[in-house]
Image 1 (cartoon, rainbow, N blue to C red):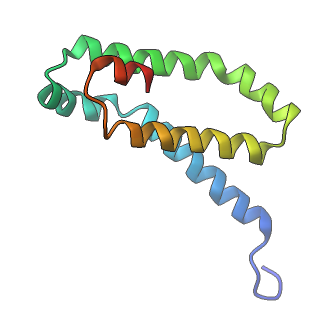
Image 2 (cartoon, one colour; image 1 turned 90 degrees about the horizontal axis):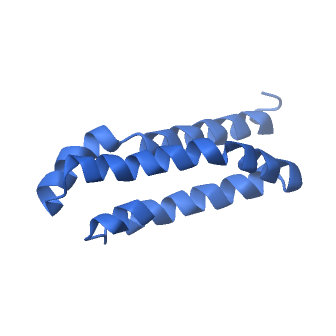
Image 3 (cartoon, rainbow, N blue to C red; image 1 turned 135 degrees about the vertical axis):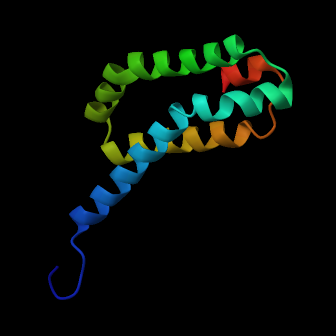
Length: 105
């Protein structure tokens, strides 16, 4: 801290940490959401697990492509687009009614 100001690197660190934390929580919340989805929609655990398995698989396979986007564009742009897409997906879960909605989201 110089002259009472927080260094910009600390802001980047905090934003990155929170972004990774939010993305990790939303991608691994299948255990928490299993019973509520089952009770609310009557979906089977296999179907719900399948949707979350597709999500985790896509996250795993997209890693090298995201790294390529980081090299082609700046990290800030890619991170903002990714977090925006995550926000849209989370908001769309509030209006889903069919199991295929969960697979698409």
